[in-house]
Length: 214
Image 1 (cartoon, rainbow, N blue to C red):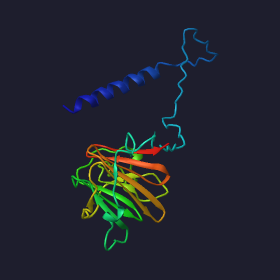
Image 2: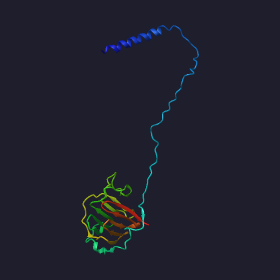
Image 3: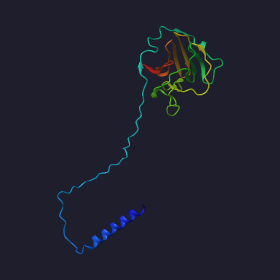
Image 4: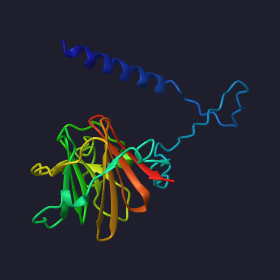
């Protein structure tokens, strides 16, 4: 079976030799152009995309006129000493929880609220950026790690801290710490807090939203 291609090749070579031997004349001259010939020009384009400079988008929290909605007049004002830690921790002088104990907040060199059962999604522009990729999608900690910036959200690493005294529904409390002042409002719907530069947030089981008071 393997010999058939070889025989075909020999026959083809023999035909070429015979054809060559029959050409005993040499023809010289100028070839006339074929009027029916078609010239095809092929252009090869580079597959490499043109590089564009990276763009950075900074999103500010939306403006609002009141946190909580409707204003603070309907809230009773709690004495902040009720929430004072004794002794204080290295980063917190005050601590409080909401009546459901789902949210615990700590106030001092940082203002951090930890939430047990929190939103499963967070907007990219409201994340703290402490972890790479999508690690910060779940909202488990909310607040100010830096008082020069807006509040942000991240995930919980380590142990859940013990809750402080309860800030009852329809109660408000104000805290003054070095470099910042805060006001928080406890409602059935959510916890609302405002802080430096009039930034604030709303935190509940289903939502984390940032604001800036106008």
